[in-house]
Every structure is written in structure tokens, then in C-alpha cells.
Image (tube, rainbow, N blue to C red; front, side, top):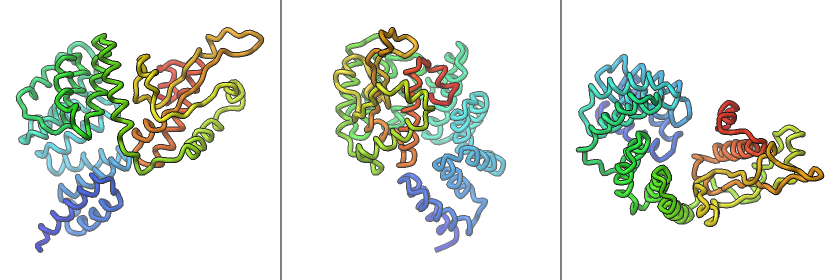
Length: 341
């Protein structure tokens, strides 16, 4: 086998491992590929992809910038850099990268990814001109034969974000029967129906989402209820003593997902946690007894949201703190300032 063929095989196996979530396997193939040609574009892109999966966005962006310098006519690094800038809430940098990518793309999947990055940048900037520019960019996809269910959902989400609700629904309806993505499609329909003011349609879609989510297999990092309670209790123990005292009579309930009754009341079936009751700051007390309230944690939703056991523990912790903050009357802006959004 030639060096070039050996390198191609290593990159292919590394990418396959990366897509399967086997980061250690991907890193082993990367190390072997580097010994053949450490500056090859595919080696650099595999390196950046692994860094992204590891949560090292800054390191990944550095690698993409190196690719851009050494291979300025390849659109992939521009698209990936645009996505990272979006994650970092830097729409101007994202837009610059997306526009450059659109000048270079010649494959349909690259075009779609670049357009979606451009739309995301305009939506993040958020003024009227940007919304119009986002809609104009999305029009470039109207004639493309998009079949991949995940991409269809992303396109639907982009139309939703710019207020094209009927178009978003049309895209979502294309994948409602997909075994893997159908639940996501129904959840998207529920969100769009809510924005259209169609409460009955929203609830129907959310109930279907709940049904499908409960039918999904448990992830490898699923924990017992006892272990889940232990992690939640550890997060509760992080709170200052005075806060814990005020929460003494507030039960923390663990459920798989919001109940059917909750969903019929308009609760999103994919909520991670829910505070029910009156915030402490608004409570009217008699003899110092607070009004009845409780905090719900939804285990199946938290496990779906996480990517591994470590992230699950962190998300349980964040959700406990988040819902505790709601008890004390903090709103979403306050939570964002505290890093609990």
C-alpha cells in the first residue's frame, strides 16, 4: 500500500471513529496519520474535529485558521470556523467565514452548511436588515434536493428562526416518520405551532414527542434513580447554608419526562427541569409557612441532552442550581448573568 493510500485509510478510520464517539480511537489514527504527513489538510481537519468533540473550541479554531492559511481555497475550514464563531456568539466573524466559504463551495453539502452558518450569523445579529438577509440566503436552498433528515431539521430550524413558520412546518413534515429524527421533527412542529398561536397543535405535537422520547433506548450513561438522586443531592449541598434552609420544605422530584398532564398544560416535554409554584419573593406567608411548591428534574431528558456520564453529572448540577434560582425569583436574564442559562 502506498503512503497516500495508507494516509487515506487512516483518515477514513479516524473519521469513522470520531462519528461513532470513539475519540481515543480517532486520536490513535490521527497520531499514525501525522507520522505520514502532519501538514496534510485531512490530517489537520481530523485534528480540529477531535478538538471540537473534546470541547476545545479554541484549539479547534486555531487548527482551522492554520488550514485556511495553508489551503485558502478549501471551503471546509471556513464553514467549520464559522460554526465555532457562532458558538462563541461572534456573528461578525462567523459571517466573514461563511461568505468566504460560499465563494468557494462546489459541493451541495458544503453549500447547505455555508448557507446555514450565514443564516445563523444574521439571526444572531438580529436586526431587520439581518433577518431579510437571512431569508435571502435561505432562498438559495429552495431548489436543492436535501434528503438527509438531520440537515432537513437544520433547514427547518433556520426558517423558524427567521419567522417563516409555514415553510418551517413543511420541512419538518418531511421527517416526522423517520425512526431516528421523527421525535425531533415533532418537537420542532410543537415549537412552531406555539409561535403560530396554535395551542392545540402545539400540545398534540408535544404529546407525540413525549411518546417517541419514552420509546427511545436508554443511553450508555444512564444511571439508576439512586445514583441520579446522589448527584442531585451533591449539587444541592453546594448551595449556601441559608439557601438550603429556605429550601428545606421544597421537595425535589425526579421523573423521566414531564407528565402527560404537564404537557397538556403547555409544558415542553423536553424540559430538563421545572420549578412549580410561587417564587419565594412573591409568596404570601402565614406564620412563616411558605406556599406549596416543588422542583422537578427530568432524568430521561437530562440523559438525552448529555453526551457522556461526566456531562450528565454536570447538567444535573446546573439544572438543580437553575431551578433553585427560579425559586428565589431570578429570571432568565439573571440566570444568564450567573452562567446558569
